[in-house]
Length: 171
Image (cartoon, rainbow, N blue to C red; front, side):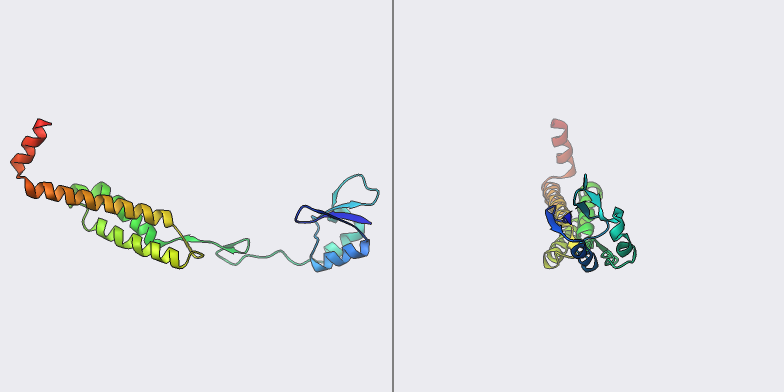
């Protein structure tokens, strides 16, 4: 008679050796399953018990579940949505370098468009795509850049170059 610890952490048994052999062939237990033989001093992996070694070595246990490419442990891997990544890249570029020369245009507009497309695709296919945070960050950066560009353009149209320089000198 034997007791086993299942994959759920619960103790099962006592069961006979024949029942344990059937569980091996059904794949309910494997070589690493912890077993306590009747009268045994402690829990042992099933593979060290000689009465089961032939059955375990015979390859009658089912093979482990193999993952297909792009999967880990049977679960599909999510990849970052390329539109979300592009939207974030354009948003960062529009805030940093873009404002220096061209008010961030067209990078901030493209960043908004790419981020919105990325968010829509992530919402439509949540099992395939991740990167919602990237798309939101790209959207925020692009909107901030567009807002700054509008403010700078408004100031530029409202004042002449001399007025801007005089205002800066007073600060």
